[in-house]
Image 1: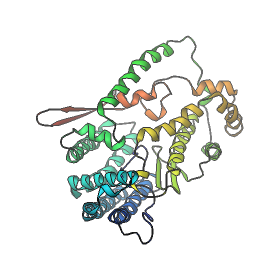
Image 2: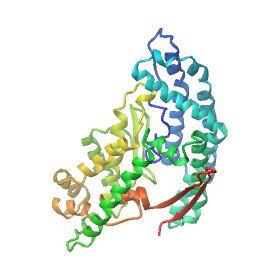
Image 3: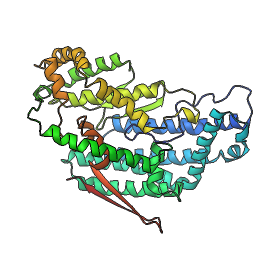
Length: 398
């Protein structure tokens, strides 16, 4: 799982060992056991994706070959997943416990959607992910030249819409996309939540921005060795009880190959230390959630709610990491390791300063929630009720 590329499947959970007891032979148990192969392969695809963002050589040739590898593996995963149809047909839901019925429903849903989408689109999606990531990193290198990334991003939206329409031709693309990340969440409900957030936050942000007192952010800026920042971040992760692997990547993310192997990345600047620290706390929050999922690979044990997932990362980053008591604990470490000349109170005020940014992962606590609605990239899906036709326009935020 990549968090931020964050819930790749409803269905592929952590490890794929032992879905049933030895000697069990009911159709339900056989179905759960049969899902082990695509689960293992899905986790293998995650390893390849993690490697491409952390270790792989930064070259067009390497990225091309990795995209082809991802494409080939996606085809095999689809083939294995599509082969479980006879077992799905043999299961009698009326004989199952309530928990088993949920597992069967999720497994059946994933199987049916795989058939509707087909291998061609699944392979195209896997290949495009690598190509789009390469275009995005290239655009960042060239002072954020959006024109380099725009064609790939437009294709990503178009393909996502096409796949969503295949999966759920009668409900609308956006409704299906929403269900992939927040299972069972109605579109009307999420729109209502966004409306509430906007109505309350926008006036509050305006009032805070006009305040006569604006905290200084000078304690966050200067010259800070990356090795010292890594030591500080490691100490924080240890205090949070996250002991998994930490790496550096262009964009911070969390990935899980099993509940026993969850990894995070962050990114650091030698001229500003807080963004790297906040990113580490955020991703460690995701990782703690993943690490505590039930290792049994049944579908119900997968992360089915991006809202729940994000609540854990933001709980640590915002509720803990921006609290006064946290900086009573962390302030001395910042002064010792980074030689920051500021009191705990001054650091506390600096990290809580409100300053709107076009970069979501660097946004302050007040403006961060609005990034889901209006920042970075604006995608407009226009649906014709008669034709179910979608037009996708991708434009840079001004």
